[in-house]
Image (tube, rainbow, N blue to C red; front, side):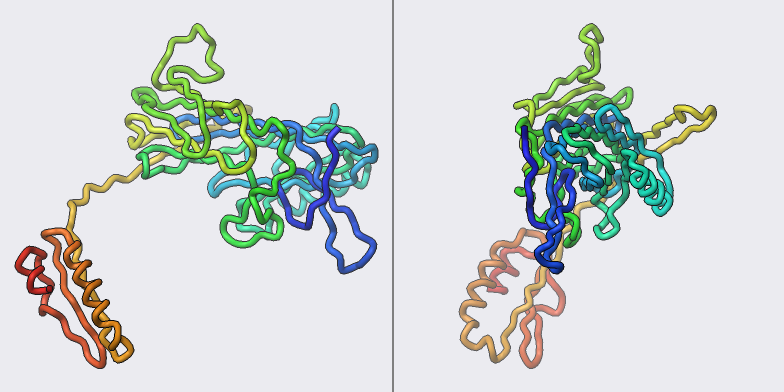
Length: 363
């Protein structure tokens, strides 16, 4: 059976508990991480909305019960958690949204009574892209299964003029240092031997069709015409596609990125969803991608040259560099040269159009 490991006080993606050190009060508490035996991510894209469900399985390899476990995992900006389920042995814990202090109080009371409980909260000491889970009273030898569902709008990828999906596979400080995030993406000891399994299904609006799906980060296998959930007898349609890792799984060493292009992807789209249990309750989301027909303009380039006393021995090099830059300009743009020392002067009063005559004058 896999054994837990002890690392310095840097949070790495996974379940951990603190091991108190009695040698010195000043010694930082060490974090003991539980082995992760399985991890899987399933994403469903409809139009420009992505719903990702992450399945993770951990095990408590010891014989003793763990009073409280902590777990951190990353989220990108604009992504919301809509479901959270934690299964410990045969006990299932489902998340209910509450005010932060009320949720903590409920969790603490349950742990004090010896019950198995879970708490999911946004880490307040980070930039908001790391969430933390706490689970109490884990029996020895028990498996812990976590199911987290996230919902968010896909980013527009200007490189391909399409959509970009990112699935974080390790926690890393993105907007500054984090005391609860890892300091190196290579430090991921909670990775199972089989790596992570990723499946992405996509479906675009009627009248549109998927033209390409690719991944700049990993090798993937793509099927155009059906999703992984479609029955074999269902007719193929360019409105649907599915992508999986070519090797079935990958190590958790970098974020998984998927790029998708489709026709009519820039058209306004409205998505309507009905509440699953409250009659008459609906929500609508409209996506508008602005487009601007800007006429091409040629820039104006002004070279500013230092000819002060400190540059006295560098003027020859300055001239050679300036000659190279001027000869590299594009015909038709406007340019000028300004030199400054105790005073300043321009080659021309107003910038002129670059052509053979103005280039020779500048030389």
